[in-house]
Image (cartoon, rainbow, N blue to C red; front, side, top):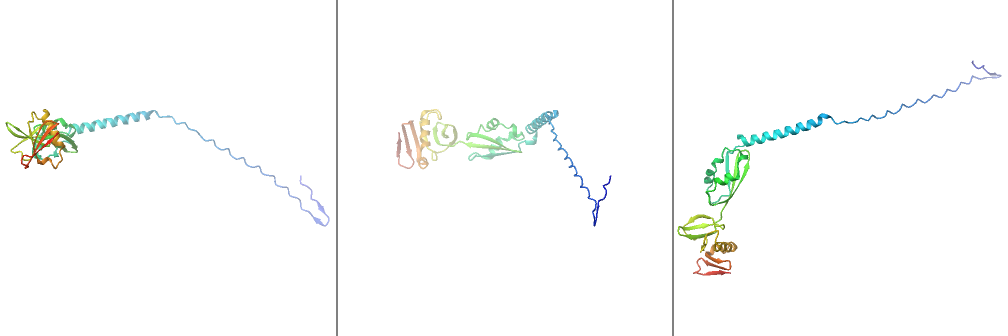
Length: 231
């Protein structure tokens, strides 16, 4: 029902409006709870890893076989280094049978066997330079003395290996009473003494005799038979 209007004398009052009803606050929506997903390993992941590994190994095997048994890495050039007294052409001719072989099949034994007739060669090493070059490194024997035999004069290295024949003793000292070079105690004592000499004195030695390390005699060049006794 409407309220009756209240009138007063000498004035007129308006009806009092009702206060608006307080609005209810809207309920805040609930925060959505995060979803937790559980990652499960896929069964085919292991298969992929295994397949990739097998494929890599197979590819590696194929590459090795191709390199080892096909002309892909065949030797087309032989490069000889380290030789000073042996002509390079003689060495490359001796190594000619290595041409055409795949680089991985070249062995040190086969190269050494090709050069076994060169007495000046002390040691050999090989280096593969793909795609087609084989490098052979030579270490030559170093002459140190001359020994006089019934067949003439011969140059020997410190190990007692005969290197070459010579016509005179003008360049290297002669070892007297050397016995069997490389085996006799006289030869070993003479070589040890020569190796211990200063470089400035070595060219002045004409001959050396060494019955033992405690009794070594040097004869000097151009000194009227002057000699030096070591021991």
